[in-house]
Image 1 (cartoon, one colour):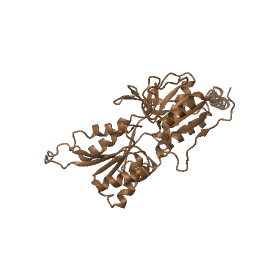
Image 2 (cartoon, helix red, strand yellow; image 1 turned 90 degrees about the vertical axis):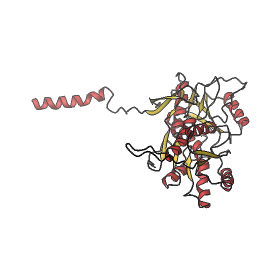
Image 3 (spheres, one colour; image 1 turned 135 degrees about the horizontal axis):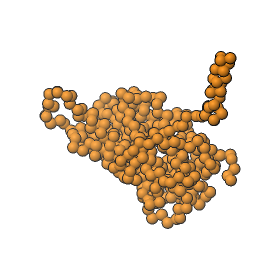
Length: 372
């Protein structure tokens, strides 16, 4: 009798979670992010937050996304994140690329199209921080800044990272690698004057995107050190253009370090191999790409900042849907910047940072459900 009672109680207790709806409840997923203040500030204070993404949208919203281009792995990773989260939430996405950071007028026309058509909100990866300065058309739907800074009183949410900090981390890596901290109780350091280190910068298009703040971060990080900036060169993020820049740079002089955009560093790997300088010049990337990752793994690239672009794309879709469904502004929000060096590289731990190798740009996500 007692044994039957124990069995009954065991079955009853086992059924309680099911009756209450807890038995198969999936664990809540969080994204570890940073909330930064002041908004759009060069120097910011950041607080770590656990962000709970949506599991579904209330409506099949229509989102318009504008990006500078899809010519490199950075924006392709953003596209992959946008597309992945749009599919996850069963919403509609249309993406338009300006084609270059130097096509401001084309992006403005694309913006006018998105404002006039049946879109609910706009994700704006601006080619210029002042894109909306003097913009006369009525802005009648939510716009959030995607990746790049966008200076306008109508913008109160930006998904991205602090590009000054991206540059500072890259510059600080070089400075720290030249002046290791002395060990405790060690003899005083030799005070003999150390020869200056030559650093060449190829950070991207001039004064657009994030290249201006990247340069400021680099220069602040290496201030009062033995590092001299021997050359600063700008061009659009095109590997052929960077090959020309590198040809001219290396014919002019031989720096000790080249610090540049991922596209510049990808071109530099081949250029240094061709000139048999791979062991004499160290390469540092201000952001990550698959080729830069391979370069770090193969000891051809020393360092890269990593701002987790796939996660940025997912977050942008999630945030704009929450705003459409009644949430307030999110301010300056995005992933925490990671740093990758040859000693800590993990090829299988970057799913939030790089699109899959077989992913090609997708411009439309169409939800088959009719709009209400």
